[in-house]
Structures are given as structure tokens and as C-alpha cells.
Length: 239
Image 1: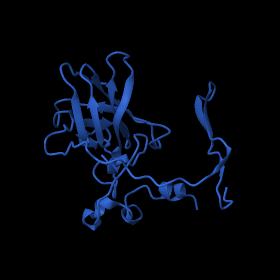
Image 2 (image 1 turned 30 degrees about the vertical axis):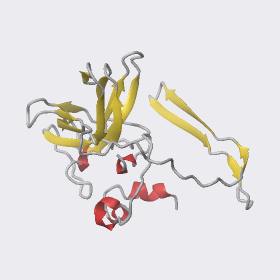
Image 3 (image 1 turned 120 degrees about the horizontal axis):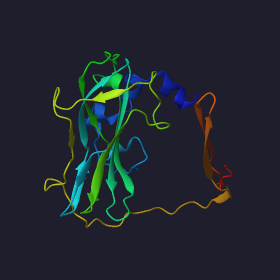
């Protein structure tokens, strides 16, 4: 059975998700662990547009940024995607450094989601993915908010308009985790030990392409992804 069958069927936090989650009991980890993750990995938090000018010095971030917002929705549903980006001073290019996504019916509990009350103002805290990055002096930070993140996130059942309120329940804030003296910044680690790889024969290179199709009559947008993981032959004959 494909894994996505269970992922779609079990959308709330329950025993299926808890049984493999280390956050249920960190004390069960009895040995040192080295975790490596990439920014595109939605599970990288196991590791660690509003503008703010960084004028004078580099800014070192280590941990999970958080964003607090006062919101309301014009439907019983809603989704908020928060992206923290660095704007390069010279090229003005936007570089994603952290993101957080919250299905708003889950803002009180992932195990027992509740429909939103239409047009009722509520306060949410979105925890972004863990980061360890040095922002160069002169760069800017951009906080981008959106109500969808397709195809990374499945859309809400209804199209919703979210309204942000300032100075209603509490302040809308972005909190950045600064690297400080309580964290080790040593750089004298030995080179990693790497085992010798097994010989293999690449039979076909991997490839991927995406097509975005817009039907102007029905106004339906179709995203078609063709992904070929390639083909590799190993010494035991497995392909």
C-alpha cells in the first residue's frame, strides 16, 4: 500500500504519527546523534513581506524562528504559509532560509482539529523550521505570507481570505533565534570517516520536468510532473 494512502487518510496526529516521533520522549535517545537535513526536506526541523535592514554587522541565527499573528477567516477553514527569506544586497535575489506552515483548523490541536468561527479573530503562533545561518551585513530579511503553498501543501477544502489584525489581541511579531555564548561554536572537529562506496553501473540518468497547463475556459490549472529516478545496476544484479 503506498504511504501517501495513510498520509491522506490519517491527517490528524494520532498513534500512527506518534509511534515514530522522537519528540514523544527524548529520554529514549541513549547515544549521540548526528542529524543531517536539507532545506527542501519538510522534516528538517529535527535538526536545527516585512523588511528589516541589517546595516552594520553579520547576524547569526541558530534555532527556530517564530511568528505570532492575529487572524480571521471568512470561511471555516484556512491555511497560512510563512517564509523567511534573505534579500541579497548586491543581486537583490531572494533566498529562502526558513518556513513554517499551519492548517488553521489545527491551531489549537493537531490531534483534535476544530472548524474556525467565521470572521472571529484568533491568535496563532507559527514555528518555522530550524536554521543555522549567518546573514551578511547589508542584507535584508523578508517575511512572506500566503494562504497556499501548492504543490508542497494540500489545499484547504474551501478558498479562504485571511485578514491580519495589528494591536488587537496581541502584537504581531517575528522572533529570531540569535546564536549566543551558550552554544558551542567550535570548528576543530576531525574530518568525517567515510566508507568506500560499492561499484555500480548507471544504466539511465535521472530526469525531471514540470508542465503548468492553464485552461482559459474552465480556469483550471493543472501541474504535471514527470520524474524519472534513473536506473542503476549493483554488483548483486539488483537494478
